[in-house]
Length: 179
Image 1 (cartoon, rainbow, N blue to C red):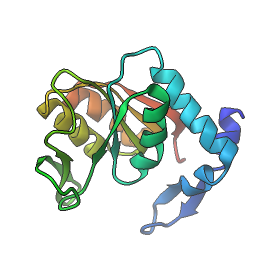
Image 2 (cartoon, one colour):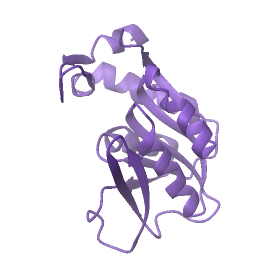
Image 3 (cartoon, helix red, strand yellow):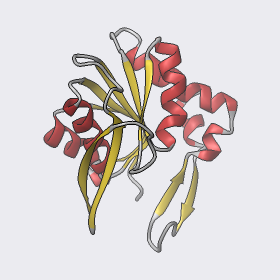
Image 4 (cartoon, rainbow, N blue to C red):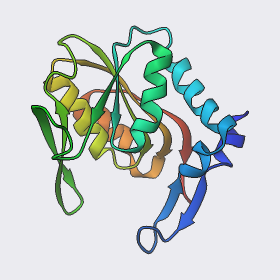
């Protein structure tokens, strides 16, 4: 399956969650077994020759891609979650939103110091959550090899923000200009 065929499985929903937003719905891509396999294969190809200890998926769609990628890489899978979702002791990272702040958590013992970690989510928009996830991994003593996404909304400059604020490179399978 070619990248354009994968792109064609992504549903665009106008005016969701609010007027003027063109929402890219990954659920139509993952329900297509060939497209879903291509997404995981793409991510695997990016990291197969690197020593990855953990794949960290950002709640919740990062779990969809992170878990199968971790299995293929022979790595552990780490969940980065919203507050009050993890049962043991956590560490957290707070980050800025357009109007306020939000916080993500990870178990304090999720990774060992010096571990090589890939951060995964379905979509890169402004980069705030992914940047916070990278910083959370670093706070735990890990080394973030990259932050990877299936979709990147290039006009929002999330990749630049992650590079500037966390020093982490990004990889995106499909880039959208949304013009």
